Amino acid sequence: MANGLDDVVAADTVLSDVDGVGGHLTIRGHSLAELAGRWRYTQVVRLLFDGFFDDLPRDAELEKAIGKARLEVFDRVKPLLAQLAPLDIYSGMRAGMAVLPDGDGLADALRLIAAPAVLTPALLRLGRGETPIAPDAKADHAGDMLRMLAGAASPALAKALDSYLVTVCDHGLNASTFATRVVASTQAGLTSAILAGLGALKGPLHGGAPGPVIEMLDAIEASGDATAWLSNEIAHGERIMGFGHRIYRVRDPRADALKAVVRQLGSRNETGSRLAFAETVEQAALDVLRIAKPQRSIQTNVEFYTALLLEAVGFPKEAFSNVFAAGRVAGWVAHAREQQATGRLIRPQSRYVGPVPDLVA
Ligand code: ACO
Image (cartoon, rainbow, N blue to C red; front, side, top):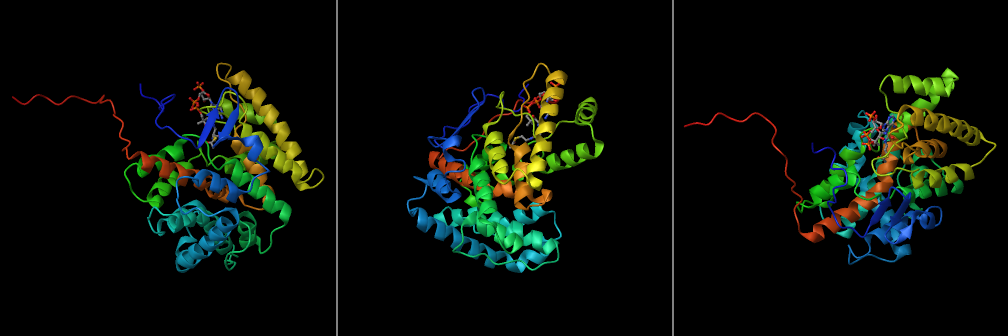
């Protein structure tokens, strides 16, 4: 049975490599450990885009160009925000991005990079009955996203969010990146391709997991017994959110990168006690999964500590997938361009297993 395209190689890429046995992630020649917490998101955008846009400016100019793109997106979506606000926050963001021009140039790419960072805070504020805050083109991308959310951004929280965006910027041919490449292969514009990625990311088996991680932590805290709660979920055929991965058979390296960022935010404050609690839940989940699924190595994935990090920087759980998209959009655009450059339409075959029509004489 053709089941989930496991082990099928569907693209050559220079953008990223996921080593699921060794537990390593390479982003365009750099290990995740080199990038996370050291490179800024803008620098990683540049790394991913290099060679795909002839007019790519240097880092400082790129930062300014992304700032300008945030303003352009805000001006373009502002008249629509009231209509988008009643939708769930992810659908509102997706609908807002759908009105962006569907071109292939650097300006189109930068608007797409800017859009989740602009739409998410604006829609959250409207949902709380507050007025959206316009972007500051001169601010750094992550800091401005937090400022648009809360009116101000502490440098520590902005750095934590920036590290998150870098950590999730690209990850091989995951479901949303594949969806993006399929649409890009038709030579549709970048907005069309990114909308495909956005659709795929939404599901709980992919980018929709971190919100449910928070619900799980809260439910376990209320129950008072992590092992019993988790065992009961497994007994009812439920999946433990934030664990398991199609490619990794060892711990997802992004989990530790993000956990280190959460730890830096403090050990004695609320974040510190949340982290300590999450670590006990993580260990209980790993023990329960090892016993329940001995045939499969199910380890912590990126979403577990994503949930803690995004909660600590101030996003509500319903917006976590939006923030994931704000990071991953850089990888999507780069993959779309890489796919377009091949000039090859992605068009696999299906095997027909339905009824056979009667032969007409
Ligand atoms: N909890 C409980 N059981 C699990 C889990 C889990 N988190 N993950 C896998 N399993 C079990 C399955 O139930 C199945 O058991 P069975 O053989 O007894 O039926 C076995 O492991 C294999 O499952 P598959 O679905 O074939 O494994 P796959 O490689 O496709 O799973 C996936 C990957 C979808 C991510 C899965 O681990 C999962 O659902 N995890 C929970 C959701 C989650 O955290 N998603 C975020 C992933 S990271 C990302 O996309 C950014």
